[in-house]
Image 1 (tube, rainbow, N blue to C red):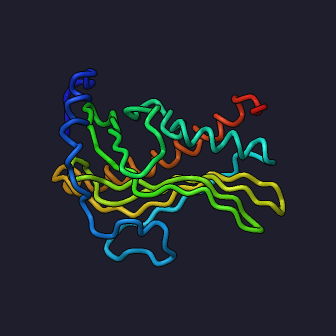
Image 2 (cartoon, rainbow, N blue to C red):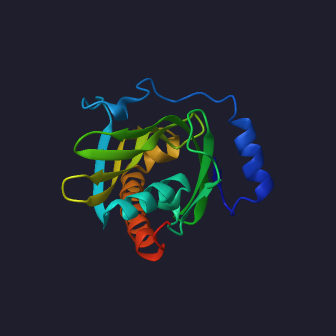
Image 3 (tube, rainbow, N blue to C red):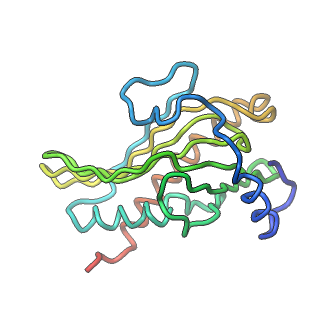
Length: 198
C-alpha cells in the first residue's frame, strides 16, 4: 500500500486487519533455513559483530524479541510488541522518495538453537501479497562458544513484487541495502546502549 501521508493508527489497524487472511506471495516458504539459495531472487547476506560474551548475547536476543533492528528512523514496525512466533503478522512502514508504504509480512519460523560451537536465536518472516517485494528475510543473533563473539545476521532473498517496485527496481534495491546497513547500526547501537541483563 502506497500513501502520500504518514499513515494514522486507524489506517494501520485496517491494513493489519485486512491482512489477517492474506497469503504468502511466494512458494519457497522457509528457504532461509536451507543452505541452497532459491533461484530467481536477489540474495542478500549481511553480518556485523555487535558484542562479546554471554551477557551481550542475552541483550542481543532481547533486542530481536523487541524488534530493535527496525529502530532506524525511516522505517517503523507495527507493532514492536508482536511476539516472535509463527503466524504473527506485522506491518512495516517505510518513508522513501517523498511517500510512504505499508507492507505486510508474517513470521514463518523461529529458532533458539545450541550446538557445541554456536548458539543461535532468531526468526524469519515472509512477504504477503500486500508487500512491495516478494521473498523472505531471516533475522538472527549468534554467540560463538569458542571465542565469545556475538553477531547479528540478516539473510534475505527477494524480487520486486508491486508494479512500482518493478519500475523503480534500482531504487528498490537501494532501499533494501539501506535497510540492511541501518538495521546493523541499530543492533550495534542497541547493545552499546543497553545495560547488561541481571
